[in-house]
Length: 98
Image (cartoon, rainbow, N blue to C red):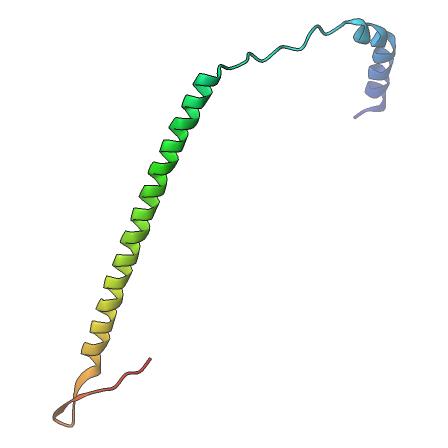
């Protein structure tokens, strides 16, 4: 900022400062009191939505767990198949311990 511009602003404020603070602002706007019935109905609606979301999340978690168990069984079966190999012309089960 240029010092001349700051000086002009300062001069303008000093000259008009009295008029800036003379004006009364009037009363603050009052927020209308919302009727309790509408608010309680909104709370009830939100509680029901929350319950629905909780049920969905629970179902997704259950599905994920069951899918995880199925995938674990598939992995174990796959490892068992790979571990079963013919060694020295004989079928032998290779022991795998985790």
